[in-house]
Image 1 (cartoon, rainbow, N blue to C red):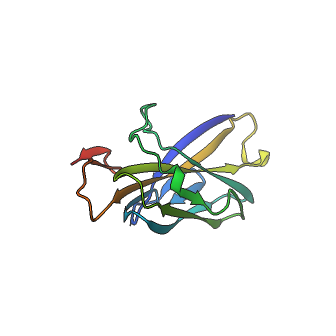
Image 2: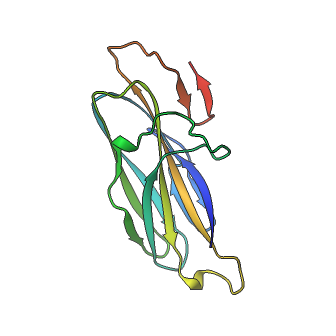
Image 3: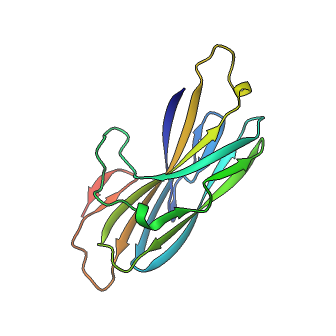
Length: 168
């Protein structure tokens, strides 16, 4: 089986959806700005536009730029990001929502932190055409969190995930 990774970007400034064949994940970018010692809740929707019921697994991973093997930012958001369930069932032509909780502790260094919610539908054999290449889609929603402390001047630059340009 081959795998396709399709990054999705989502945010409190929510980005558009990403479509991969019969599947849609929205929002595609979660780009958040938050103060330390905060709790945020976000939702990512997976849409199944097939005629088959599916199981969709969810995994949180460190976000890596699609064209590079190095991590864009040295800080990962995995230590304070969780997903409500790791597997959900979704019926034909239905949607399922994955809730993401972001619990920012009082002590992180200011700056940009990244994670990725990777969604993997399990496809039945009937989904594929006979003698076709069976590609299993993987769709991702990127989580970019700019953490600020209003009592301390920012000493680091922040990354804008939408353009992947550095901004001071």
